[in-house]
Every structure is written in C-alpha cells, then in structure tokens.
Length: 633
Image (cartoon, rainbow, N blue to C red):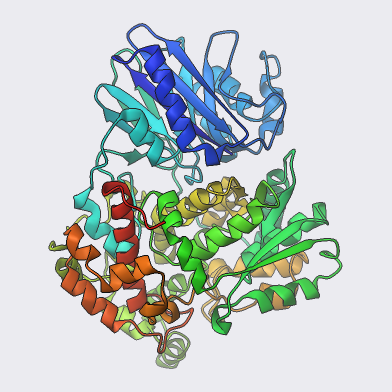
C-alpha cells in the first residue's frame, strides 16, 4: 500500500517536475511513510515524472518503486497489492527481475501481453506504466476501484495522483467548486461517477485503463472489466453453491494474508468481518483483532463480538483483541477526517471507521476487513424489499399479507417504485427530495442526477435485485464504501484488504440464483454466505444467522444536543458560517437543525433529520477547508 503521483509536461523543466513530485509526495506521505522516490524520463516532445511514497509490506528489501526494466526502460509505479503474483510469476520467469515482490510481475505481464495483462491480475491496485517503446503512459485501476486514482489536465500538464491534494499541488491548479454536482451530493451523501466536487479533477473509473499518447497529449479511457449480473445459473443446487463459495472465500482470504509484516483483522458484530477473522485465525492463531464499541446500547456491537469469540474460544485462544470506544467526543476529530477524505462524504460511518483504523494502525500495518459482502451478495434490507416488490403480484392474497407483515415498508415502496432501475436506485438512496434540494441549493436536481458514467451496463434481462446490485457495486461501493475505507485507513498508514471483493467471488455471486442471495421468508440477505459458513464451520450457527444490524452511529442522539457538540459544529448549526459561504440557504439549514430529534431513531433508520444536518455540516467543513483555506483544528 503506497501513494503514486506523476506529471506529463511539455513546458516544465526536469528540475521543476522533480520539485513538484517531491511536494506531491510530501502531501501524501501518510500513504507511504517508509520511503519515497522520484524519477523523470526524457521523451521526444515532453517529460514524464513518476513519484512514489512507500508503506513497506511485501518485499521489504527490493520492493521500492519506480521499478524500471533494464531491457527496454519501461517503468511502473503502483499503489496496492497483486495478491496472485506468486501464481503469475512462472509465466514470465525468464524476464530480468530486479525485485522479489508483486508489482514487477505486473510490469512484465504488460510487456508480454500488452493491455490484456489486467485480465490476469487479482488484487487491489491503481498504477501507471511508462511504455518507452510505444511512447505511451498507461493508468489503470482495479475492477472494483479499491484503490483511488485521480487525474487532471492543467496548463499543458497532465497530472495524476492517489489523492486530490497532491494533484492540486502538482498541477498548480486552483481548487474550484463543481457546482453542477452539488445536488448529486445532497441526494446520495457522496458523489458517484468520474467527477469529483472539484471542477476539472476526475477519478479514473473502476475496471478501466487510460491510455495517454506521450507524443500528442491525447488520451482515451477503456473498460477492461464489466460486472455482469445477467449470468444466473438456475441449475446450481444450494449445496453446490455453498461448496463453490467456500472454496473461493478460503482462497481469497489465503492470498490476502500474504505479507512480510503482521496482518490483523477488523471485527464488528456483523457476519462478514467475523467470517474473515475466523478464516484468518486458522492460519494466524495469534491474530490481532480490532473492534469499536459505543456507550449507546442499541448501537453497540461489542456484546455480539464477545458472544462470537466465546462461541469460538478454541480458534481465537491466542488472538489479541483490542477495543476502542466511539463516543460523542469522537466528533472532535471530524475536521481531520473531512480533510483526509478530500471529498464530502457524510455517512456517519466515517467516524468509527477512522477510530478503528487509528487503533489498528498503532499495532499493525495490514488488516483484513469484511467490506463488499453486502453489495455483492445482497446483504442490505433494500435488496430484500426489492425482491418482495418483484414477487408480490405473483402471490396469493394470504401470501401477500404475510409478505406485508415481514416487510411493513413494502406497501409504500410499491406505490412509489419507479419502473426505471436507475431512478429506482435514486429512490433507495434519497437524502433530500427535489423540492428540498431546490430550497437548500437554489436549483432543482437535473434529470441526470445519477451520472451516466456511473451507470452499470444492464441489458434489461437482469432480475431487479441483480439490477440493484449492479448499481450498488458500480456507484456506492467504490465512491463511498471503499473510498472512505481507503482514505481513512491510509490516513493512519494502514493497509486494508477486502477478501469479498476478490473478482472471482464477485463473478460467482453474479451466477447465483437470486433466492440464494435473498431469502424472503426469513428476511435474510447473503443467505448463501450464512449457509456456507455453518456447513464448513467458519462460523457458529448463532453468529452466521444473526439478524443484520446496519453499521451506523448514534448521530441523532448526538446532534439533538447541539450545545454539547464541538464549537465548530455549533458554529455551523447555530452560527452564520453557512450564510457567509453563500452556497446553501442558511434559513433552510436552521429549519433542519430545529427538527433534529433522537425520538424513534435507531440503527435501522435509513434517513433522519440528523443525517440531513450532518450532510450540511460535512459539506460546510469541506468547503471551508479546501476553498476558504480555514480549518477548525
């Protein structure tokens, strides 16, 4: 896990490029505190600079980058890990290796297979290759976008980086608000798609590569992998599916334990992190486990974690369990979190994510996590409701009545359910409606509030649940779930590995009959996962079939007492900061603040007044930080 950055320029000198690369590296040194380096390549019509900051995890002695092939002067820098590098290396064993790790394998695969090399990689990665022979720069990103990669063009320079602050520095581009996407943020609480809230700064989409011609400055982006969810195999038995799932899951965890430093595991009360920790402990009995707790009982998952560990004492007898409390005082760290995320992301999970990564980062350099299972295997309740809505009209009246009792929200959902899957997805994520957004920002949401570049490739034959999974994995997964995990773990120089986002496991999930993912009678998502965990003794039955509780925080409890909040939050909620910025309607914000209450709000509440106010708080702090140059810490 590291940070990369680079510059292509037709006007800057080599000395100036190296100076900028050094500054860019310093701005993301948290991603690579162990070492750094820069290299400038002289081209026919321009100069190309590569910069790298290193967090040493694999190949501690010879794994520094950029790696340059002595045969043809091609070079690579890459942030992340290629987990299957050992299996791939025999294919290219005759190449002149100068390192013993994973990233040089990717370089030689490219030299041997061209851009098809990406089809062979299994891992999390965002990298750049300099092809000296073809005078090309290749930027590439893993299938699910686990590792970030931003780019921009400015003043005859093409600049890329793992983070936005180095990008602004390296391009000397002034931060400019992307006002056209303001309404999108206040719809989802994050920004899906290529665009960021910084005008002119884009993300390379997941599963794509960018091919840049170093002679004429033109580039094109192509998709090398598409997550297709119309591949259902309805002849697969449940037991065959469980067997296949377990084999893939075990191998996914196995290759993610490859490291030359200690690997720990994040552990919540959910079945996903429990299953990952359980398999990891089979190979690493003394594994370090990291858990967050809350004072507020209904949000606290620590009792479930302790029940799980007690039920599996033999497996975890040598494990080291570390626990940290996430309390209202955690809000004092919000300015640092907003600064590290670089993009406004206002889901409350950013707070415990940051806290658990801080705790883990003081003990280990690498942890496994359970992220991705809910998106790939339909773990959220909205997938169950979607399945119920699809099936409802095919049922008898008594069966419909039973379904309404299991899903009390179904009746309203079916009344509002849009026939178009993209608009239906908007409905499931809505923070503010169109009228409220007009009052808040002064503009109605546009028809393309869900960006076209974030749309999955659907052909219309997909089951509605699979269509919803396609949107989830194409937008919310990379642009919220993984973005906050990457930025907040790397803020503490911690590498996070996500076994459920092994592309083999995801493609297998796409082939499953929908009823193996969502079980309407029991109201359970990820059914195949729970079934396989018990069949193969990965989890005890009580844990495997535990009712899902959303990973969230007592935000409504905290924000309903504004005078107990940190001063900077009081300034936003009760002061005139919003009015001074002139971006949002301060009168509307004051009305929102007045409506915040903790009454009737719990972990299952998808959207509360507190969530809306928190979105305003995060945006205001982000705007203050990046556009006003002012901080609250």
